[in-house]
Amino acid sequence: MVYNFNLGVGWASSGVEYAQAYRAKLLRRIGQEAKFVFTNMFPQDNIQHMTENIGFEDSEVIWLYTFFTDCRISPVTFTLKDLEKTFGSKNFSGVRDGAKVKYTFPGTNTYYVAYLVNDKEKRVHRVEMVSNGCLIRKDYYTYCRIYSEYYAPLDNKAHLYLRRFFNENGSAAYEEITDNNVVMYQFPDRLICSKEELVGYMVSCLKLTRKDVVLIDRTTGIGQAIMQNAGTARIGIVIHADHFSEGATDEEAILWNNYYEYAFSQRKHVKFYIASTDVQNQLLKQQFKKYMEATPKVVTIPVGSLDELKVPKKARRKHSLITASRLAGEKHIDWIVDAVAKARETVKDVSLDIYGKGGEEGRIREQIKRLHCEEYVRLCGQQDLEEIYKNYEAYLSGSTSEGFGLTLMEAVGSGLPIIGFDVRYGNPNFIDDGKNGYLIPVHDKMEKQERVQKLAECIVRLFTEANLEKFHKHSYEKANEYLTTEVEKKWKNILK
Image 1 (cartoon, rainbow, N blue to C red):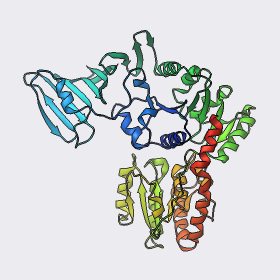
Image 2: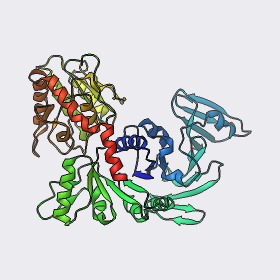
Image 3: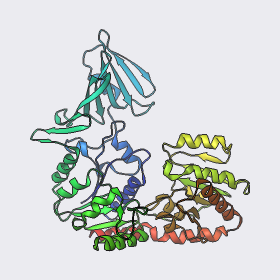
């Protein structure tokens, strides 16, 4: 069995979760059993809805908190009718408002608010109970009640002091006692005094052997507990970002990325490290040798793969650009929008479609409105892009740091040339400057306006000077090494 450890997952997941989803698909294809373990708490959503959304199967997912119960990962099927049955003989009335139903009980000072999975269905994710104006409990459901949170008023706020996790039959499996972020876990036979210790207990319960492989995608708060309890299992560390700080590194010392520092210090217990590009692989090996006098095993396995190359059946939309990412500050979508608006002065019909969701969406929407470019710059939301890339002529990236760049891989898989900055590791991995796009040189003191200007110049150059047919062809050639059949071989080799 291959166990893959991560922290969280969300509706607008990061590249780490999408990398895991790609891996799950690949491991299924080669017949390798795998589990994907998530250790964060998800009070606002059912974890199953989010993992299914990006491609995991329910049987592949382990959630730390239900691991110690007999409740399985499941979509929400608990309904309003099921909830109303729990009211017994009480008189009640319910009023629906979108995705909420408020139940009141005549003659009492208590009301319930049921939160539904959406505003059209009757499936209940959680129920909040209020008595005498104070929140006292929240119940969470999938096909049964999986856990409850208990609250008491403190400083005029609802203070969470207990979570109780249940088995299918309603019996209590264990409790989380919490006070100002200090937690303890009470089991029938033991008391566990921290979240990290809980993770370690879970790993010990897996009873891992040398036939098992443990892949750690994120180590923050869980890495040490996993390694200490993994027994004879082979441990692999997957590197998803730049692994060191260049500005704080000199000939005498290196400053590792905090996410990987512990994993690198424990190299004697790590069977292999996985980098997603050869450039990062070689650099990491050199640094291990130079700064640590060590030669650990480092292999290159792309974090994603392409089942096939996507070739359009009709002409691509002329002068059309696409970008796809979380709408987060580090992706610099604002630079891209400014650059496209500037390029429009020369290429009169240039257009940009932006795919993705995130915290910067509102700010980007305001920017588009301010620049009066609504007609040719569109926010397209979160979509499955597998058949969409091929409709465009080129891909734009504003990111200044990509460990790999799944969207870059998907773009070349649809033959798109790419314009992006010459920064480690994704862009140089997929862009051969002047052959299938442009790599823009950057330096630390390069201001935003200069970056925008360079992006705009490259857009104009691509659409007025480049042989787009040759650029498309070269991108397809680059994409061949990321075909699923090739990446499968790499996973088979490391897991055998």
